[in-house]
Length: 406
Image (cartoon, rainbow, N blue to C red; front, side, top):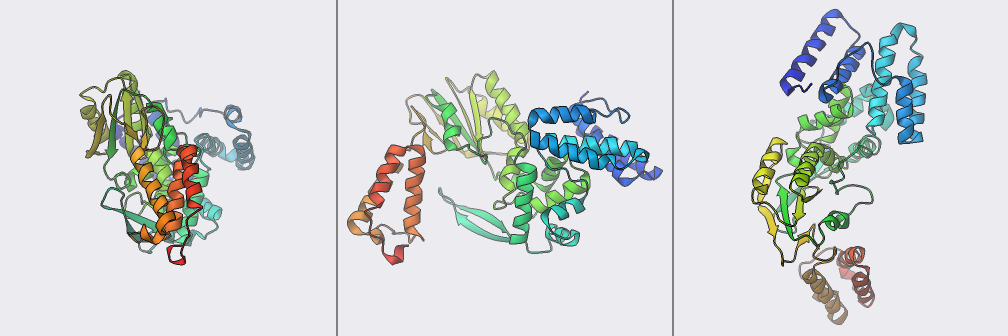
Protein backbone atom coordinates (compact mmCIF):
# COMPACT_ATOMS: atom_id res chain seq x y z
CA UNK A 1 0.00 0.00 0.00
CA UNK A 2 1.28 3.48 -0.91
CA UNK A 3 0.78 6.26 1.65
CA UNK A 4 0.83 9.98 0.92
CA UNK A 5 3.09 12.29 2.96
CA UNK A 6 0.04 13.68 4.78
CA UNK A 7 -1.16 10.16 5.69
CA UNK A 8 2.29 9.23 6.98
CA UNK A 9 2.43 12.35 9.17
CA UNK A 10 -1.05 11.63 10.55
CA UNK A 11 -0.26 7.98 11.42
CA UNK A 12 3.05 8.85 13.08
CA UNK A 13 1.57 11.83 14.95
CA UNK A 14 -1.39 9.84 16.31
CA UNK A 15 0.85 6.97 17.42
CA UNK A 16 3.22 9.35 19.23
CA UNK A 17 0.32 11.09 21.00
CA UNK A 18 -1.22 7.78 22.14
CA UNK A 19 2.11 6.54 23.51
CA UNK A 20 2.79 9.82 25.30
CA UNK A 21 -0.68 9.78 26.92
CA UNK A 22 -0.17 6.15 27.98
CA UNK A 23 3.23 6.92 29.56
CA UNK A 24 5.16 4.52 27.33
CA UNK A 25 8.95 4.51 27.64
CA UNK A 26 10.19 7.33 25.29
CA UNK A 27 12.90 5.09 23.83
CA UNK A 28 10.38 2.38 22.95
CA UNK A 29 8.12 5.05 21.42
CA UNK A 30 10.95 6.40 19.24
CA UNK A 31 11.98 2.89 18.17
CA UNK A 32 8.35 2.08 17.28
CA UNK A 33 8.05 5.32 15.29
CA UNK A 34 11.22 4.47 13.37
CA UNK A 35 9.92 0.98 12.58
CA UNK A 36 6.50 2.34 11.51
CA UNK A 37 8.18 4.99 9.34
CA UNK A 38 10.26 2.23 7.72
CA UNK A 39 7.11 0.19 6.94
CA UNK A 40 5.16 3.20 5.68
CA UNK A 41 7.95 4.24 3.29
CA UNK A 42 8.04 0.75 1.79
CA UNK A 43 4.31 -0.01 1.84
CA UNK A 44 4.80 -2.93 4.26
CA UNK A 45 2.31 -4.35 6.74
CA UNK A 46 2.92 -2.79 10.18
CA UNK A 47 3.16 -5.45 12.90
CA UNK A 48 4.95 -4.64 16.15
CA UNK A 49 4.30 -8.17 17.43
CA UNK A 50 6.25 -9.93 14.68
CA UNK A 51 9.16 -7.66 13.75
CA UNK A 52 11.11 -8.88 10.75
CA UNK A 53 13.81 -9.89 10.21
CA UNK A 54 14.54 -11.97 13.32
CA UNK A 55 18.07 -11.67 14.81
CA UNK A 56 19.05 -14.94 13.10
CA UNK A 57 17.73 -13.78 9.72
CA UNK A 58 19.39 -10.39 10.17
CA UNK A 59 22.78 -11.98 10.95
CA UNK A 60 22.51 -14.23 7.91
CA UNK A 61 21.66 -11.22 5.75
CA UNK A 62 24.63 -9.20 7.06
CA UNK A 63 27.02 -12.13 6.59
CA UNK A 64 26.31 -11.99 2.87
CA UNK A 65 27.32 -8.31 2.92
CA UNK A 66 30.65 -8.49 4.80
CA UNK A 67 32.08 -10.19 7.89
CA UNK A 68 32.96 -6.92 9.65
CA UNK A 69 29.34 -5.71 9.64
CA UNK A 70 28.12 -9.14 10.76
CA UNK A 71 30.57 -9.11 13.67
CA UNK A 72 29.34 -5.67 14.72
CA UNK A 73 25.79 -7.01 14.79
CA UNK A 74 26.82 -10.08 16.86
CA UNK A 75 28.29 -7.79 19.52
CA UNK A 76 25.16 -5.63 19.51
CA UNK A 77 22.95 -8.71 19.92
CA UNK A 78 24.96 -9.79 22.97
CA UNK A 79 24.80 -6.36 24.62
CA UNK A 80 21.12 -5.73 23.84
CA UNK A 81 19.96 -9.16 25.04
CA UNK A 82 21.45 -8.36 28.47
CA UNK A 83 18.41 -6.11 29.03
CA UNK A 84 16.57 -9.25 30.13
CA UNK A 85 13.16 -10.80 29.61
CA UNK A 86 11.30 -7.82 31.14
CA UNK A 87 12.04 -5.78 28.04
CA UNK A 88 11.27 -8.27 25.25
CA UNK A 89 9.64 -5.61 23.05
CA UNK A 90 12.57 -3.24 23.61
CA UNK A 91 15.07 -5.99 22.73
CA UNK A 92 13.34 -6.94 19.47
CA UNK A 93 12.95 -3.29 18.43
CA UNK A 94 16.55 -2.47 19.33
CA UNK A 95 17.91 -5.42 17.36
CA UNK A 96 15.81 -4.49 14.32
CA UNK A 97 16.98 -0.85 14.66
CA UNK A 98 20.66 -1.85 14.72
CA UNK A 99 20.23 -4.26 11.81
CA UNK A 100 18.48 -1.63 9.68
CA UNK A 101 21.26 0.91 10.21
CA UNK A 102 24.05 -1.60 9.57
CA UNK A 103 22.25 -2.85 6.48
CA UNK A 104 22.16 0.75 5.20
CA UNK A 105 25.90 1.13 5.81
CA UNK A 106 25.50 3.38 8.88
CA UNK A 107 26.78 3.00 12.45
CA UNK A 108 24.01 2.41 15.04
CA UNK A 109 23.44 5.33 17.45
CA UNK A 110 20.58 4.95 19.90
CA UNK A 111 20.88 8.32 21.64
CA UNK A 112 22.59 11.66 21.06
CA UNK A 113 24.92 10.77 23.94
CA UNK A 114 26.23 7.87 21.84
CA UNK A 115 27.35 10.29 19.13
CA UNK A 116 29.08 12.48 21.72
CA UNK A 117 30.97 9.45 23.06
CA UNK A 118 31.99 8.34 19.56
CA UNK A 119 33.47 11.73 18.61
CA UNK A 120 35.12 12.26 22.01
CA UNK A 121 33.14 15.32 23.11
CA UNK A 122 30.87 16.04 26.03
CA UNK A 123 27.16 15.98 25.27
CA UNK A 124 26.99 19.71 26.05
CA UNK A 125 29.88 20.63 23.73
CA UNK A 126 28.43 18.58 20.88
CA UNK A 127 25.09 20.41 21.13
CA UNK A 128 27.03 23.67 21.36
CA UNK A 129 28.63 22.93 17.97
CA UNK A 130 25.21 22.09 16.53
CA UNK A 131 23.65 25.46 17.41
CA UNK A 132 23.79 28.48 15.09
CA UNK A 133 24.79 30.81 17.94
CA UNK A 134 28.41 29.63 17.90
CA UNK A 135 30.50 30.88 14.90
CA UNK A 136 31.45 27.42 13.64
CA UNK A 137 31.97 28.43 10.00
CA UNK A 138 34.18 30.86 8.12
CA UNK A 139 32.38 32.11 5.01
CA UNK A 140 34.35 33.34 2.00
CA UNK A 141 34.03 33.47 -1.78
CA UNK A 142 36.18 32.04 -4.55
CA UNK A 143 35.89 32.93 -8.26
CA UNK A 144 34.26 30.41 -10.58
CA UNK A 145 36.08 29.32 -13.72
CA UNK A 146 33.32 30.67 -15.97
CA UNK A 147 32.69 33.90 -14.03
CA UNK A 148 30.81 34.70 -10.84
CA UNK A 149 31.77 33.55 -7.34
CA UNK A 150 31.18 30.43 -5.28
CA UNK A 151 30.43 30.78 -1.57
CA UNK A 152 32.48 28.46 0.63
CA UNK A 153 31.63 27.77 4.28
CA UNK A 154 34.62 26.21 6.03
CA UNK A 155 33.83 24.57 9.42
CA UNK A 156 36.01 25.19 12.48
CA UNK A 157 38.33 22.33 13.48
CA UNK A 158 36.15 20.78 16.27
CA UNK A 159 33.12 20.69 13.94
CA UNK A 160 35.28 19.50 11.03
CA UNK A 161 36.42 16.57 13.18
CA UNK A 162 32.81 15.63 14.00
CA UNK A 163 31.76 15.92 10.35
CA UNK A 164 34.61 13.66 9.26
CA UNK A 165 33.43 11.05 11.77
CA UNK A 166 29.88 11.31 10.38
CA UNK A 167 31.23 10.93 6.84
CA UNK A 168 33.42 7.91 7.65
CA UNK A 169 30.96 6.05 9.89
CA UNK A 170 27.53 6.95 8.50
CA UNK A 171 27.60 8.33 4.95
CA UNK A 172 30.48 6.69 3.08
CA UNK A 173 28.97 3.20 2.71
CA UNK A 174 25.39 4.25 1.91
CA UNK A 175 24.27 2.63 -1.35
CA UNK A 176 24.00 5.06 -4.26
CA UNK A 177 22.74 4.85 -7.82
CA UNK A 178 25.36 3.57 -10.31
CA UNK A 179 24.57 6.73 -12.31
CA UNK A 180 25.95 9.00 -9.53
CA UNK A 181 29.61 9.51 -10.43
CA UNK A 182 30.84 12.36 -8.20
CA UNK A 183 32.33 12.18 -4.70
CA UNK A 184 32.88 8.41 -4.79
CA UNK A 185 36.00 6.37 -4.17
CA UNK A 186 37.86 5.27 -7.31
CA UNK A 187 35.32 7.05 -9.57
CA UNK A 188 36.46 10.03 -11.65
CA UNK A 189 35.32 12.36 -14.41
CA UNK A 190 36.65 9.77 -16.86
CA UNK A 191 34.14 7.23 -15.52
CA UNK A 192 31.40 9.82 -15.93
CA UNK A 193 32.42 10.59 -19.52
CA UNK A 194 33.06 7.03 -20.73
CA UNK A 195 29.38 5.90 -21.07
CA UNK A 196 28.80 8.80 -23.50
CA UNK A 197 31.75 8.08 -25.81
CA UNK A 198 30.83 8.03 -29.53
CA UNK A 199 27.22 9.02 -28.83
CA UNK A 200 25.54 10.71 -31.80
CA UNK A 201 23.82 13.37 -29.65
CA UNK A 202 24.41 14.57 -26.09
CA UNK A 203 22.26 16.74 -23.82
CA UNK A 204 23.92 18.43 -20.83
CA UNK A 205 22.02 20.27 -18.10
CA UNK A 206 23.05 21.76 -14.77
CA UNK A 207 21.16 22.07 -11.49
CA UNK A 208 20.72 25.61 -10.17
CA UNK A 209 22.27 26.32 -6.72
CA UNK A 210 22.76 22.61 -6.07
CA UNK A 211 23.90 22.57 -2.41
CA UNK A 212 21.62 25.43 -1.19
CA UNK A 213 18.53 23.62 -2.52
CA UNK A 214 19.23 20.77 -0.08
CA UNK A 215 17.68 22.35 3.02
CA UNK A 216 17.64 21.37 6.69
CA UNK A 217 14.30 19.43 6.50
CA UNK A 218 15.69 17.40 3.59
CA UNK A 219 18.88 16.65 5.54
CA UNK A 220 16.78 15.48 8.51
CA UNK A 221 14.84 13.29 6.08
CA UNK A 222 18.08 11.70 4.83
CA UNK A 223 19.10 10.61 8.34
CA UNK A 224 15.55 9.41 9.10
CA UNK A 225 15.53 7.37 5.87
CA UNK A 226 18.83 5.79 6.88
CA UNK A 227 16.97 4.59 9.98
CA UNK A 228 18.01 6.91 12.84
CA UNK A 229 15.73 7.87 15.70
CA UNK A 230 14.28 11.36 15.35
CA UNK A 231 16.41 13.04 18.11
CA UNK A 232 19.59 11.54 16.62
CA UNK A 233 18.58 12.55 13.08
CA UNK A 234 17.92 16.14 14.20
CA UNK A 235 21.34 16.43 15.84
CA UNK A 236 23.13 14.89 12.84
CA UNK A 237 21.30 17.30 10.51
CA UNK A 238 22.27 20.30 12.65
CA UNK A 239 25.90 19.21 12.57
CA UNK A 240 25.73 18.79 8.78
CA UNK A 241 24.00 22.08 7.87
CA UNK A 242 24.77 25.81 8.00
CA UNK A 243 22.16 28.57 7.88
CA UNK A 244 19.52 25.97 7.09
CA UNK A 245 21.20 24.49 3.98
CA UNK A 246 23.97 22.13 2.95
CA UNK A 247 27.26 24.07 3.26
CA UNK A 248 29.77 23.96 0.43
CA UNK A 249 32.97 23.29 2.34
CA UNK A 250 31.84 20.70 4.91
CA UNK A 251 33.20 17.16 4.31
CA UNK A 252 29.69 15.71 4.81
CA UNK A 253 28.04 17.80 2.10
CA UNK A 254 29.16 15.91 -1.06
CA UNK A 255 28.00 12.55 0.32
CA UNK A 256 24.71 14.02 1.56
CA UNK A 257 24.08 15.59 -1.85
CA UNK A 258 24.47 12.20 -3.52
CA UNK A 259 22.09 10.58 -1.03
CA UNK A 260 19.58 13.42 -1.52
CA UNK A 261 19.61 12.64 -5.26
CA UNK A 262 18.98 8.89 -4.98
CA UNK A 263 15.31 9.14 -5.94
CA UNK A 264 16.13 11.65 -8.69
CA UNK A 265 18.79 9.29 -10.09
CA UNK A 266 16.32 6.39 -10.03
CA UNK A 267 13.68 8.39 -11.92
CA UNK A 268 16.12 9.77 -14.51
CA UNK A 269 17.69 6.33 -15.05
CA UNK A 270 14.20 4.98 -15.75
CA UNK A 271 13.47 7.89 -18.09
CA UNK A 272 16.70 7.24 -19.99
CA UNK A 273 15.88 3.53 -20.29
CA UNK A 274 12.44 4.29 -21.76
CA UNK A 275 13.95 6.74 -24.27
CA UNK A 276 16.90 4.41 -25.05
CA UNK A 277 19.43 6.90 -23.75
CA UNK A 278 22.39 6.77 -21.37
CA UNK A 279 22.24 8.85 -18.16
CA UNK A 280 24.91 9.91 -15.67
CA UNK A 281 25.12 12.62 -13.02
CA UNK A 282 28.33 14.21 -11.77
CA UNK A 283 27.29 16.38 -8.78
CA UNK A 284 25.02 19.01 -10.38
CA UNK A 285 26.05 18.11 -13.96
CA UNK A 286 23.47 15.86 -15.67
CA UNK A 287 24.19 14.17 -19.03
CA UNK A 288 21.98 12.21 -21.44
CA UNK A 289 23.32 10.67 -24.65
CA UNK A 290 22.13 8.43 -27.47
CA UNK A 291 21.36 8.22 -31.15
CA UNK A 292 18.78 11.00 -30.89
CA UNK A 293 17.71 13.26 -28.03
CA UNK A 294 13.89 13.62 -28.07
CA UNK A 295 12.62 17.20 -28.38
CA UNK A 296 10.50 17.03 -25.23
CA UNK A 297 13.27 15.70 -22.98
CA UNK A 298 14.24 19.07 -21.46
CA UNK A 299 10.61 19.82 -20.56
CA UNK A 300 10.15 16.37 -18.98
CA UNK A 301 13.46 16.68 -17.19
CA UNK A 302 12.54 20.08 -15.76
CA UNK A 303 9.23 18.72 -14.43
CA UNK A 304 10.96 15.78 -12.69
CA UNK A 305 13.64 18.07 -11.22
CA UNK A 306 10.98 20.42 -9.80
CA UNK A 307 9.09 17.48 -8.29
CA UNK A 308 12.30 16.34 -6.59
CA UNK A 309 13.05 19.81 -5.20
CA UNK A 310 15.71 20.89 -7.71
CA UNK A 311 15.80 23.55 -10.42
CA UNK A 312 17.18 23.56 -13.95
CA UNK A 313 19.87 26.13 -14.86
CA UNK A 314 18.54 26.96 -18.35
CA UNK A 315 21.53 29.11 -19.36
CA UNK A 316 23.84 26.09 -18.97
CA UNK A 317 21.77 23.65 -21.03
CA UNK A 318 23.73 22.38 -24.06
CA UNK A 319 22.68 20.08 -26.89
CA UNK A 320 25.52 18.56 -28.91
CA UNK A 321 24.57 17.21 -32.34
CA UNK A 322 26.25 14.77 -34.72
CA UNK A 323 29.50 16.14 -36.14
CA UNK A 324 30.16 18.50 -33.24
CA UNK A 325 32.94 18.22 -30.68
CA UNK A 326 31.17 16.90 -27.59
CA UNK A 327 32.20 17.69 -24.00
CA UNK A 328 31.18 15.79 -20.84
CA UNK A 329 32.58 17.04 -17.50
CA UNK A 330 35.28 18.93 -19.41
CA UNK A 331 36.41 15.97 -21.54
CA UNK A 332 36.00 15.40 -25.27
CA UNK A 333 34.06 12.14 -25.83
CA UNK A 334 33.88 11.88 -29.64
CA UNK A 335 36.22 8.85 -29.76
CA UNK A 336 37.46 8.39 -26.19
CA UNK A 337 37.58 10.55 -23.03
CA UNK A 338 40.31 13.04 -23.79
CA UNK A 339 41.62 16.51 -22.97
CA UNK A 340 40.15 19.30 -25.18
CA UNK A 341 42.69 20.29 -27.83
CA UNK A 342 42.46 24.01 -27.07
CA UNK A 343 43.07 23.45 -23.34
CA UNK A 344 46.18 21.35 -24.06
CA UNK A 345 47.59 23.83 -26.59
CA UNK A 346 47.21 26.79 -24.22
CA UNK A 347 48.82 24.91 -21.34
CA UNK A 348 51.69 23.69 -23.54
CA UNK A 349 52.28 27.25 -24.78
CA UNK A 350 52.40 28.67 -21.24
CA UNK A 351 54.90 26.02 -20.11
CA UNK A 352 57.02 26.55 -23.25
CA UNK A 353 57.14 30.30 -22.60
CA UNK A 354 58.07 29.65 -18.97
CA UNK A 355 61.08 27.70 -20.23
CA UNK A 356 62.03 30.40 -22.79
CA UNK A 357 61.26 33.63 -20.91
CA UNK A 358 60.84 32.65 -17.27
CA UNK A 359 57.66 31.94 -15.26
CA UNK A 360 57.21 35.59 -14.21
CA UNK A 361 56.45 36.49 -17.82
CA UNK A 362 53.51 34.06 -17.88
CA UNK A 363 52.01 34.69 -14.43
CA UNK A 364 50.11 37.76 -15.65
CA UNK A 365 47.26 37.32 -13.17
CA UNK A 366 49.59 36.94 -10.16
CA UNK A 367 48.39 33.40 -9.45
CA UNK A 368 49.78 32.37 -6.03
CA UNK A 369 51.98 29.25 -6.00
CA UNK A 370 52.29 29.42 -9.79
CA UNK A 371 54.64 26.44 -9.97
CA UNK A 372 52.16 24.19 -8.12
CA UNK A 373 49.40 25.65 -10.28
CA UNK A 374 51.11 24.54 -13.52
CA UNK A 375 52.12 21.16 -12.11
CA UNK A 376 48.50 20.61 -11.04
CA UNK A 377 47.29 21.23 -14.61
CA UNK A 378 50.00 18.95 -16.02
CA UNK A 379 49.15 16.10 -13.64
CA UNK A 380 45.46 16.56 -14.48
CA UNK A 381 46.32 16.01 -18.16
CA UNK A 382 48.50 13.04 -17.18
CA UNK A 383 45.55 11.45 -15.35
CA UNK A 384 43.41 11.65 -18.51
CA UNK A 385 46.07 11.15 -21.21
CA UNK A 386 49.41 9.90 -19.78
CA UNK A 387 51.25 10.41 -23.09
CA UNK A 388 50.37 14.11 -23.34
CA UNK A 389 50.75 14.64 -19.60
CA UNK A 390 54.26 13.17 -19.58
CA UNK A 391 55.35 15.64 -22.28
CA UNK A 392 54.12 18.57 -20.19
CA UNK A 393 55.81 17.28 -17.03
CA UNK A 394 59.10 16.81 -18.90
CA UNK A 395 58.86 20.41 -20.16
CA UNK A 396 58.25 21.70 -16.62
CA UNK A 397 61.54 20.14 -15.50
CA UNK A 398 63.38 22.72 -17.64
CA UNK A 399 61.69 25.76 -16.06
CA UNK A 400 63.95 27.91 -13.88
CA UNK A 401 61.72 28.90 -10.96
CA UNK A 402 62.35 32.23 -9.27
CA UNK A 403 61.72 32.43 -5.53
CA UNK A 404 58.90 34.95 -6.09
CA UNK A 405 56.87 32.48 -8.17
CA UNK A 406 56.94 29.62 -5.65
